Structures are given as structure tokens and as C-alpha cells.
Length: 250
Image (cartoon, one colour):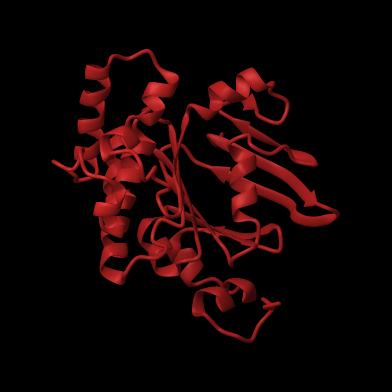
């Protein structure tokens, strides 16, 4: 049984369908990449998985809990099991690195300042950052900000970490560095990772499985090698970056 099971998920906004019957299994302790073009519904799917949106129909079961039927109190508890690395890290500019990483701990726990500081230093070390806790986001490179964002996502010891376009806006070398960081942290901590991406090369590097979302449906789920060798014309056009094919740009 999958850790997270999505079945027949439908969602429309203003009468416009975005998700059209998504089926997806997220395996515990593995990295699942949700790949697709911009605007295909990746972020909407993630918002359903973490309980921020309710589907028009369909189900999402996480570790035996039906998130669609859960009340707000139960959803709040479930959300604490998720960590999120946002696309551009989404750090608070007015807070130091330490204050950013410890933000959720101050909001949602009764830990002392000393205990929070110890956790902050540990999480920063896990993402390869030391001695930066008193600096501000504006003083950091793009790659360092991503690392701080990941440290913050790890602060509450989540079961699942969601990476929203983790290599977006980064140069190729820094992107490869972030890919390696995701791999090492996922293996070290045994995390279940969900990565939203349109970066094919990065997906090949970090994914145990890759799910291609197109027009509100998962059209294929495969290993990186399976995606590379897929005969599905939608998959082929996307991974080969071809203009001609069933994917239409509007």
C-alpha cells in the first residue's frame, strides 16, 4: 500500500477543469517527481495533497487517513507531517537565517529558545551551512537561500518534504548541487519526497519515479529509465523538448 494514494481527483475553478481524474501513488521513503509544463495543475495537485484544497470529487489517503473526509483539526495535524521548500525559498527578508529556520518551531511548539537554537544549527548543518545563522537572506546567494529554505522545511522533522521547482532560477552547476543535496538529505533522513518540476535533467537525477502530468491527468508513471525509453508521444515530446506533437502551447 502506498504512503499517499490519490484516486480519481477532479478539480475545476470557475467551471474550468484543472485536474481531470488524477491517480497517483507516493511511496514511503522514496522520491516522486511530478513533471509537467507550466500551468498543467502540478501546484493544484500538491495543494490537495497537503489539504489546502478540497477536490470536487476523488480521494486522497495518507497513511490510512482520508484527507478529503478529515475535519480541520485532523488536517492541521496532518499538515505538520509535511515540510515545504518553496520555489524561491520564500524566506522572510526581515528575519535572520536562524529566525527563518526556527519560525515554525516558535509558532507550533513550546520549545525553549535554547532548544530551538540547537535544532536550527543541526538543520543548517544537514544542508551544508555553518556560521550563517546571523546573516539575512539578502546576504545569501540563490543556492544558499534554497538551502536555508530546506533547513526550515526540515525543522519540524516532517515525514514528507515537498520541493516546489527546487532548481528554478539557478545556474546549471548550482542546480546540480541542489539535486545532490536533495538526494543526500532524502537518503540520510529516510524522507518521502515529492518534487514539482519541469526540469527533465534534474528529474532524472533525483527521482525514484517520475509522473508526467498533462491536461489534468497523469499520463505515465515510470522510473527515470522508463521515462527515457517511453513510447508515449506526450512523454517523448516533453522530454525531447520538441515543438511538434500532442502538447499544444496556447
